Length: 75
Ligand SMILES: [Zn+2]
Image 1 (spheres, rainbow, N blue to C red):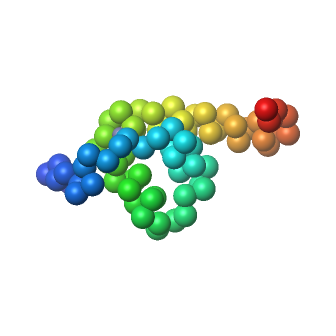
Image 2 (tube, rainbow, N blue to C red):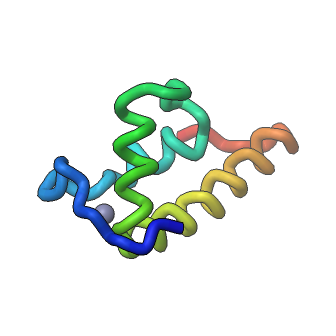
């Protein structure tokens, strides 16, 4: 854990969107891409997005479970 909360140079960018959090947790954001790094680094300091990410993570788990069961009802 870093002890000095150095502000990322991109501070001021908008919060990670729900859409991007979902893509991040669904593995749709390419490994090592600037987008993935930006999301990961944002989650290091933004509690709000971490909380939303955790909620999104559960949401994604629910989707995955539904897909596995084969009864995911696409609208
Ligand atoms: Zn945020």
